[in-house]
Length: 95
Image (cartoon, rainbow, N blue to C red; front, side, top):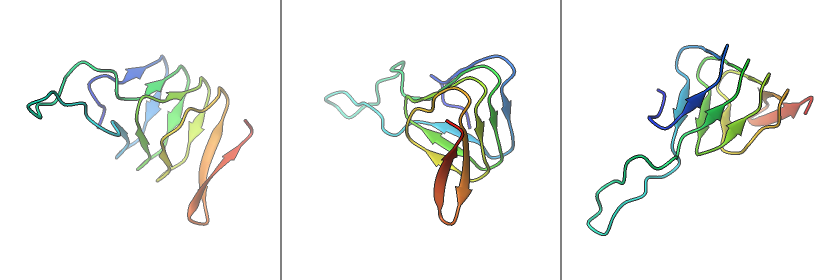
């Protein structure tokens, strides 16, 4: 799933079941969702995101990063980061 305000750079590889979603949805006074507000991730060039990974919110995944399978992210990552799941928590390597 790729949210409508997500931005993807060049040479980005997304494997099956990846979600680039929002953490929340702004609503007007009547409770109607406000569209076109940037709320989905920015994925820079040469990023690989493996199966089942979920990235939520307007976060930036830096160029050349690698996101392992089944990882959940809700924060920015600097370029060249590698995030894998290890023992029930995410581990950031090589940042």
